[in-house]
Every structure is written in C-alpha cells, then in structure tokens.
Image (cartoon, rainbow, N blue to C red):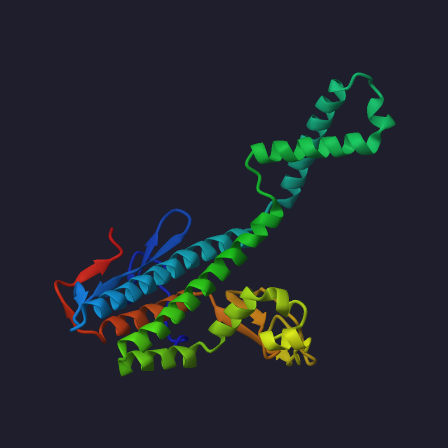
Length: 292
C-alpha cells in the first residue's frame, strides 16, 4: 500500500477501514477494526494472553491516532480562518477603557494613577487579563500551540504502535508480522527518528545527536535542506516545525525529516493492524471495535 495513493472523502462514507463522521465543525475519524475472532488460538494460554494484550494496546494507539488527527485538523482549520483583527482591536480598546475608568474611580485620589503610573498600569493590565479570561478569550499563544500538541500526539501514538508491533513480532515469532515491521520501517523511516528528536529536544536544541555525542560534547553535522518551507545549503537546526500537515525535526544525523499528519498515514496504520490481526489463528465469533 502506497501512502500517496489514498483519496480523502470528507463525508459520512467509509474510507476503507476508516469511517469519516461529520458534525457541524469537524469530521471525526473512527477506525473500524474487525477482529477475525475473540481470542488468539495457541497451545500456550499465557502466550495467547500476552499476544492479546499487545494487540489491545496497539488498538488503543491506533484509536489515539484517529482522535489526534481529528483534533489536529480542527485546530488547523481554526487557525486558518480569517480573523477580524480590526474588530478584535476595537473590542480590546473598549475593554481597556472600561477597566481603566472603573479602576480610576476606585482610587482615593483623582490623580493618584499618575503619581505611581507604572504600578497602576500593571494593575490595570491584570484586571484586563482577568476580564478577558472571564469572557472565555483564550491566550493567543495557547491558540497557536493546539495544532502542534495534536501533531505531536499523533506522532507519539504512531511510534508507540510501532514499538508494540516490534514486540509482537518477537513474541509471536510469525514471519508475516516481522515482514509488516520491515514494511513500516521502509515506508516511514523518519517516524522513530522524528519521535526521538521530539522526546530529546533538550539535546537537539543544543546541536547534539545521539546520546553518546552528548557525553562527548560532539555537535551534529547539519545536512542541507530544501522542503519548500526551509532552504539552507549549510543545514539548519529546526525543532517542531509544521510544514502544512507535516511535522519536522532535525534528527540525530543532522538531517531534517518530516512525518505526515494525515488520513493517509492513519489509513496506512489501520491496514497494517488488520494485516497483523489476519496473520493469527483465532477462535470465537468475530467482533468489531470500537463499540458504538
């Protein structure tokens, strides 16, 4: 399955194994998972129990990817909507005038505000901020972070899915599962590296790559990058950059890599998971998740 060969349908239709459920503001992605049976068949009950637990954890991370993608796109859509900056500026000005007027009236002397202007100006600013929060106005710095938080959540869930897949390949000893691991590593080689750089930004931000290089105080050799957003022949140290729907980091070898936060990626992981499920022998009736 190629990641770039998937068509996105924004309607209440089934997208392969992904249901797209619309509401008034955002399309909710639901991964429809079909288990061939109730329990894995194995001569070793303890082993079957472990394998089922691993699959359950993978399902959780796949669902987390769907939720994160939904929230990522919602946040991205909100940030792309044209804002009435002039109107916001006027409302802010009026609020400040009201707060300052009430504040001046509360002072014991009419001109006291000018005798200790810096102090009173700071107090007025506190009152303005308090009133904005009461009115449900979100700090702009928070608004800008939502899309990044959901992008990182998507990447983290995808990487956790990958880690459980690796353990499942070892524990099951099934060659087909090992082949699925190799396929994922081939199609998304940047996933683990980007996730590691996100986890170790304290090292990347200082120019260090691998843990051994941190101990040796050896800086990374930055590689050239040209991705439409960043262009540098000498390389660049970039952390948590969103290029459209692609989250990018400078990874431990000094190159800049990105992972796509998209329905394409979610659908790919969904297909991998169903291939994993179908590689086992099952007993009991088939079941569908998540429960609705």
